[in-house]
Image (cartoon, rainbow, N blue to C red; front, side, top):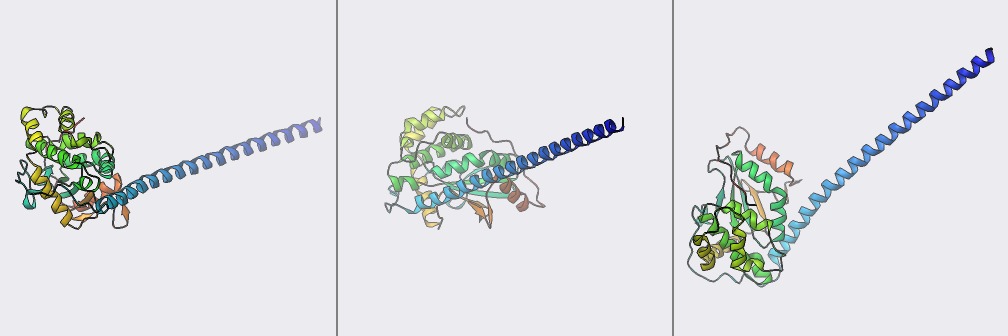
Length: 284
């Protein structure tokens, strides 16, 4: 009888040892999975920052290459769109006038880096606008027309100014970037295409808007804005500044991300009261 009890005890200990070994193996695998998840997260985050940084470099190259100069710098009447603000009335403001911080953005509607910036940060910028934390001042440039030829930058900027006359700049601005053609495709040079896209903004496609687009009502203003960009010492489009400090592709040593943009605005607004605003509609 005793040997049987001994055998049973050894068997039980062996089973316990096996269970412990299995538990350790499971724990090790879970630690490996967690480590792999963290590694993938870091890779994705680094890739996003890397794409934006590379995009900024491409924007710099686009702004400074070609040597053709902007073909749309001819003189002409300067008719600023309704509500234009800033020096020489060259900015279109979105958001409450009394918002505590100002995000200044220089953009070209043909610029692919500008579209990447807008697609990455559009929702965050609108959230900050609609909660009264920032106002955004848009300045329009025509760099791609100068470098690649065509007139899509100018025509789209004029159409956006016409949308500003109708009180629908923000929504139409977003529609243009969501439907941006390839950089080498001058589709925005066709006024009919710009009018077609206005149908995505409720109430914008009117006889007045069409006439403004087709007549190039704000062409002179767009050209003057582009001259201001060229004389401003900026490195390329997009240029983004928070209260005058550059934040794209980074602010100091920190790369621009959605989280960092929110953090930077919160830091800038510390102790300041947000504006009371009506949410700005965005185009489809």
